[in-house]
Structure formats: structure tokens, C-alpha cells
Amino acid sequence: MGFIVKLLLTGVAAMLAAYILPGVQIDGFVTALILALVLAVLNAIVRPILIFLTIPVTILTLGLFLLVINALIILLADYLVAGFDVDGFIWALIFSLVMSVIGAILDLIF
Image (cartoon, rainbow, N blue to C red; front, side, top):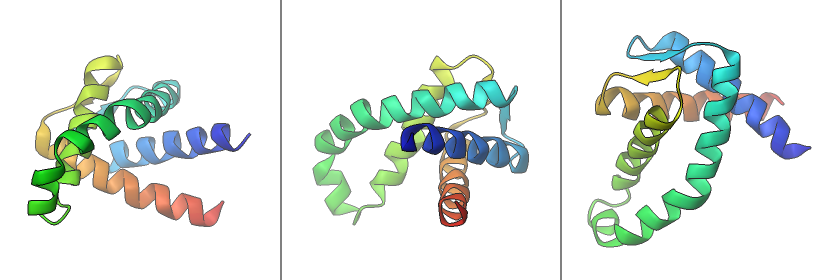
């Protein structure tokens, strides 16, 4: 049950972040839920591989390269989910930051 609630909160966070940012478009809430599911799968499978492959760069940048990995995950989700559009790398980076902040606030509330 907790996974479904987490998906719903991530979908709401994605909708709010897309509403705030002009460089990100989501067609509707169903698309946001699909995006949340795709992001969960990508974060479970692809993100650990990318983190392992980029350990030296991550250490060299004191962990800031993880923001780049988050933006790459968002761009990959943009490619996979119809109805979700990000205008570029910078918007993906900003979207991941805004969505993380909104998700943290929603987690505190619920």
C-alpha cells in the first residue's frame, strides 16, 4: 500500500513541478502517474548502474554529479513517456530539483 501512496505523491509532485516550470509539460494526471512509475523503475535499475560507473567523477565533484545523473534519468523518462516533454538538460535538472523539494514537502505532510 505504501508504494501506491508514494506513486500518487510523486505524480502530484510531478504535476506541481510541471505547472511551475515553463520548460516541462505533462498532459494530465494519468501521464504523471505513468511518469512516476517509470521514474521508480529507472531509479531502481538504471540509477545504481550510472552511480557505480561514475564513482570517480562523483567523488571528484563531491557528489554534485548525482544531480547530472538525476537530470539524465528525467531525460530518459521524457523519451519513454508519451505526454511528458522536457525542453532540455537544464530544464530536466531544474525539474528534478523542484520535484524533489515538492516530494519532500508532500512526504512531510502525508
